[in-house]
Structures are given as structure tokens and as C-alpha cells.
Image 1: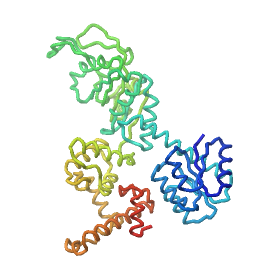
Image 2: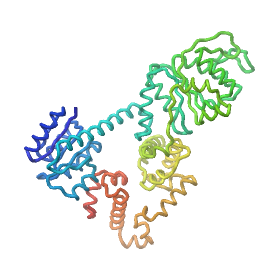
Image 3: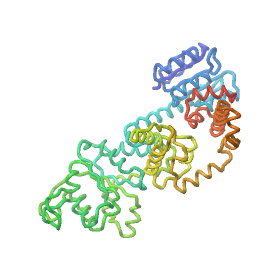
Image 4: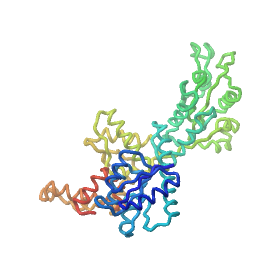
Length: 462
């Protein structure tokens, strides 16, 4: 059942659609004009809006813009008895879900409504799912798959093997699994296998008793003892030596450990989450990793995608790191220029999210204004190449940057004329880059939809 709002100045059409949709099991609210419809949208939750285009006062197209500014995800279906290609194009560019001409086929509108509802509910479910894991930034399809997998595997005691390149956030995923598990209140103990010398690894994992080797001046509990009844996170599991792999396999099979130099066996109940940036199947073929251990660890395999495969998450990640480091460094740098962001979007990030975080931290530290510019990103050579390619593409440069020849010319024009000209050209550039979609252009220019609409009217760009 969906909550549907119908806006139409014809009572007969409102009544017809209400009867039709009520029979389909939907809850229907009606509005006689766009203003009444907008008030309804702002006062109650709806899953779908169906609006006529031509109404007295505010038109359906204007209502669409207002609705999208208030709730960009809310689907809006436009209907009209005066079909116009221009209206259809405008409606679709401004975010309408579909455009239907009167008189319409009943099955057609039922099908469109079902499609709109299905898409909206899927988006709502995705937003709900991502909100469960606030420490992991991402709304891309790839990350939603990760969130779904975390949501399903976390309540179980199954061991998890997380694949992913360095810097993708494998430990954050492991922490999310633990924090949504049945043992969330018990310890989460991480250890990086590559950071421990080979001769100390057994002691770090299983502990040791006093005097068991030179330097063992007291008893020590190992990782598995500390993680008992909780979760042990073994990062870079592919770096374990064959001997330690054999001992770890016994822990997984028998659920017991024996400290180095000790005689007493301790029974433990630990969930293992392991992570690796290697392809363990290849390590098995090369004889460097035990196949039986692999299957014990990879009860549930989970791959965290590299940042280059989810570039749609970069703007949100950038915003998150801007807020974080503005606070930590005591600066008011909370925005990034569209050109700096474009350079980031063209870069492949071999260091993944960790590299992006470092770039933004440096940008905030070096920036003297309140917005991060390309020159403050401390670009690597490959990023500079991307930036140069972007700068050499004439379609990607507003013409004012090519037109300005000297400071004297700027002073002759005057500040207001230069600023207005630059603003107009940037807005033109933004509209061109987004195929005249005002919603996308506003996002690209980092201003509100309402501000963009005012400025396009001001400069005659409608």
C-alpha cells in the first residue's frame, strides 16, 4: 500500500484517479491546485505524486521543481490533456518519473505507478540499510551490496573473509559486522599479521607463559584469549607463515589454544573475521596458503570494491573528510571547488579511500580560503596528469578563463561586471555539462536548486 497525492484542478479527474487507486489498495489524498499539493507534501509523507501540468496559479512544472527541492527522491508523474514535446522534455529534465498524456490507458497508468512505487521503495530501503552503518560512507550500488551482506551475516557466528585492496576500509567492514552481531558487547580485537615479526606471531596469537623464551618475563594472554566470546580480526591473513597457518587451523577446528611454553589447553569461543589484499586462491596454487584453512576462514567471502569502482561515493567521502579535518585542524574549509572535485573524479586512487582522506587532509591544511582549490590538493604525478588533461579539454573550461588577459582589463570592467560575467559563464558551463538538468547543475555548482533557478532567470538562461 502506498500513500499517493493527486493534484489536478479538474474534480472529475481527481475523483476518477482516487477511485481507481483506492481499488488498487493505495491511500489517496487529493489537491485542487499546486499550492495545496505542495503544502500536503510538506506536511505528510507520500510515496508518489501525480500532478496535472496546467493548473491555475502555480503550474505542475513549477510544482515539480518545488517538490524536487524539498525531497529530490519523491517520484512525480506528470499528466496533461495538452501534450507538448517541450513540456515533456522539461518535465523529464527536471526529474519527473514519467509523462502521460490524457486520455490515458488505465493499464498504462497503473503500470507506471507500480514502477514508480517499486523504484522509490527500493531507494528508501537502500537509504535505511546504509543508515545502519554510519561509519562506512557510501550509497553506490556496490556499497549497498556490502551493507546488505553485513546485515545478513552479522547476526550469525560464521567466519568471514574480507577481500579488498589496501585502503578500501576492510577493518571498518569487520567492525560493522561485529557491532551488529550477537556478541557486539564483547571484545573486538584486531591484529595486523604483517606487522608482527615471525618469531613473535605465535605468542601474539596464543599467548605465552613466563620463561618460555628470552624476554618472556611474565605470562601474556594472546589475541584469542583477549577476544574470547567476541571477535578476532586478522588483517593481512595472507602474510601468515605455514607453521602459524597450521596452528590457526587447529584453533578453528578444535576451538582451543595452548600458550607458548604452556601445558594447559584453554577452550575459546571466538568468531574469526580475516582480511587480505591478496588473491588467496592464487596463493593456494603457489603453495603459500593452506587450502583447508582457506575454507575454514572463507565461510562467507566478502569483497570490498576499490574506490575506482564506486566513484559515485567520492563527493560524499570528500564532504565527510572536509568536515572531519576542518574540525580537527581548527579551520573553516568545508567546501571543494567543482574543478578540484572533477580532478578527483578522474583519478583512479590506487591507495583507495585512505589516499583520498590523506589528499583532503592536506588540502584543508594548506588551503588559505574556505574552499579547497585544485592547487591545494598536493596532487601526485598521475593526478596532475589527470588535471592537465582536464585543463587541456576546451569543452571543460568556461570561456572566461581563456578571455581574461590582464589585471588592467579586469579593473576596466569593474568587480561587479567580472563577477557577474564569471557567474553567468559558470552556470552556462554547468548546464552544458549536465545536459541542461537544473537539478544536476545545481549539485555540480554546489548551490541550491532555488538559487540556480533564480540565477538562470537573472541572466536570461532559462
